[in-house]
Image (tube, rainbow, N blue to C red; front, side):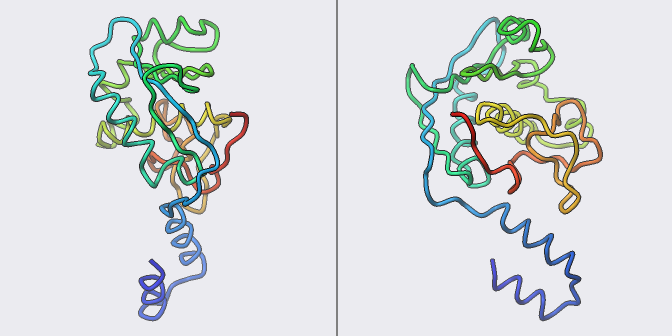
Length: 197
């Protein structure tokens, strides 16, 4: 990583702003090596769903293990058959709304600790904001998992993108629009903290 950056400095006229942006981008993909928090989780479904539970479980496990994700904040996720600290649920739109009728919408996914309910319709079809950009359904699914689990880890919504990278913070409600940001499925360096778990 650093040798490429040094080579870039030597061979090109790079502004300090560009260098800082690239450094931030490099840090964005750096892996956290120490585990500070262990979160056990179980996976289930609620209501009439069309998504595959097997696929749902695999994408969750892959997203949780990815070095671009919450592991960089020191979080290790471990699947258990039942009784996890976190309950990952693929739910019908009606079931998402039912968990908190005044706080959850049947058009979005929602977190009501210790439950993360992923809306089956969104899981299967993505959102207009992502689909219009041609972003893959897998990237959308990873974003939704990381966003909703971010709430479980203590994060609130963020209203705009950071000017240094243009990447959407994971806690931006990207399902409803990108607000001039670039689609992003992973927490930014500024979001790598945990509170209240």
